[in-house]
Each structure stands twice: as structure tokens, then as C-alpha cells.
Length: 195
Length: 231
Image 1 (cartoon, rainbow over the protein chains, first blue to last red):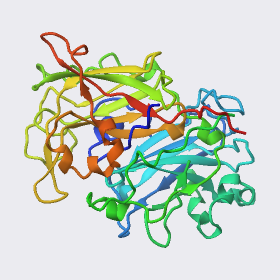
Image 2 (image 1 turned 120 degrees about the vertical axis):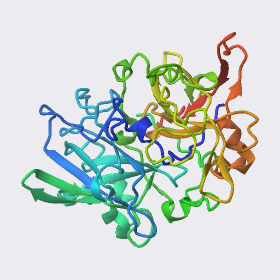
Image 3 (image 1 turned 90 degrees about the vertical axis):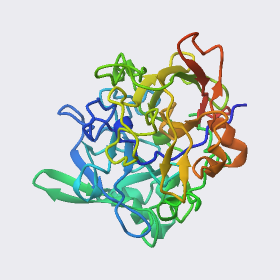
């Protein structure tokens, strides 16, 4: 039987390959930081954050991807049980090398609950120089705290670390912003998921 | 619903691999937490042919300004499958690399080697119904890096792939057979020994086009639906 091809680091020089539009290389992106348009079902939100290494320094050469359902809990993929919404790709990609403070930002909609008893969330995939194998985690939303108590994935995460998966909401004149910082190491280390 | 095969940790490099110095502060200290699979893991983004431009798979043309890029033309092709050998059709394959002199067009690459005005170094394609992809490019050069004294990366091409679900996601690097730098490279050697050769393309005379370009085959295996349905 064929065996899985091993992972390797994305390296420091991915920008013109994976995010050429965002970084100004004059080629089109297959996906970028903006997931929604005016017709996407759901509440328009921004998700933003930084990645901190083990010394507390922000990481300027990571690429972050998110995969999420639309505001009604539907994934674009036809495999989704809740019914497909193929107009919403549900996929975003943002490098941390173009914004002040090494931030990543997604302009999207707040996902709906996608079934299986889950609270609303987005899957996050993280690549960077110095990471030989990409990491998965999830972004949950602070205003859904009541739903977090019954979420099957959060239930598998140790109590004391669950808060690392919850983005904090603040309401701004431009709309709701959720803050999701990622800590690679230390007391606040983000929980990464073996999915 | 069908579950996906788990990540094969005997194939992938560890999260902290001190020979590759940057992993020491960037790899997480705690192992990933095993969680149940849900609809969110059984689905993934879909990229159609609309994502692809007509020159996107031809790196000898997609960066031309006033002539042909310098270096040795090569064909890089292969088949994307899952662990049961089933083809992954419609998979987005993205690729990027340095030029023949070992220089990336990326703005922060400081290596003292020339840029090629006619070479961009990135491309993409979508696999066909049999999971096949094919790129025409220039063989990348080796280049030095700061990991340790006299450190050089073996020639390589970066690959990014999407499979049947988000858990199939893979970013990797393809290497060339017989490269004397391979035994010295901490990134390549971060892969468990028994799995390293999966990252080395093979030269193929049938893929090679007479009078035009050498051919290399790099087959890629992604996580797919488990053969035994779960639940």
C-alpha cells in the first residue's frame, strides 16, 4: 500500500507561491484573507491575531489557513451533511508578513453550528519556517460559551487549556472583531489538534 | 460517514528537531490532542479549473519578460493518490522554487546569486481524473542558509496540496536523486529514515522529452477516506 508523503516546512520564501496577491507579486491568489462578499449568509466578522514563538516574539513568516462553514453551518464541500453552499468557498489564507505587528486577518462571516453537536468554529491550519509538519487547531467564539460545554472536540481538550481555542469578541464601529492569538510554547501554549 | 485515515506520525518529521534550529522556539512543547472527527474534518475546500491560468503549470513561460529563463528545463510530473491507491482527482497542486542559480524571487532572500528576469518560480495546476499533474520548469539550484556553518539546502521544489478533506492538506518538498547534499540537510533528515526516500523524485526516461527536457516523477500520497467505514 502507498504510504503518506512526509511533510516538510513551508520555509521562509512561500509568499510568491502561496500568497502572491497579498504580498504584491502580481500573480493572482487562489485564496486570500477575504472570504465573504455582500451575499454570504451570516454575520460579517473579522478574525485577527498574531503568532508568538517560544521567546514571545511575533512570527512574521507564517501562513495561516482557515476552513469554515457559512453562517448557516453549511460547508462548501459536497461532503457536508448539512447541505452545501458552494457560493461560499469557506477557505481563507493569510501570510503574517504584510500587516503591522505580524498579524493575520480574515474578513469572513461567523460560521453557524455545523452539526454533530458542535459549537460554531473554524478549522485553522498553520505553516511556518521552523515547523516541519503543519499544525491544526480550531477557533471558537467567546459569545458561544454556553455551546462550548457540550462540544465534542472541546470535551477532548483538557479543561485548563480550552480557553486557548476561544477567540475573544470586541465590537467596533467597523463590526465585530474576534482576537485569536496563537502561542507556540509556554504557559499559554495553544492547543493543537491531532485530526 | 466515512472517517479519514489518521496522520501517519511515522512518516512525518517531529515538531521539534533541534538540528533544524528554527524548530526549537517554534515547535509546540505539547503533543497535538487527539479529538473525534466531525463534519469539519470530512470536508475541505474545492478548487476548480477556474483557479488556474493557462500558463500556471509552465514555469518556463509564466515569468517571461524578454526571453527564456536560464537553466536546465525539466518536466516534473506525478500522480496524487490516497493510501488505498485511489487517485485524487481535482486536487490543487501549488509549487514554488528558486531559480537555476539558487535564488528565490522572494523579497527577503538575500543570497548573493542573480535573479533571472524571465523566471518567477511559482505555478499551480489541478490534477486530472487519474490524479495526474505535470509541470514544466527549470531545475532549481542549491543555496546556502544560516542554520549551521557551511549549510546548503539540496536542490528542491516546494509543493502544496489539497486532497479530499482539510485533513489531507500537505506542504512538502521534492528533492532530486543522487544529490550529495541530502545526507547533510537537517530538513530532509527530519523525516524518519524509512520515509525519506518518498521525497526524492525519480528520473524517468519515458517522461523525458527528446531534445528538450529531462523528466522526473514525484508521486504524492495524501490522507483519504479510511477503507473501513466508521460509526
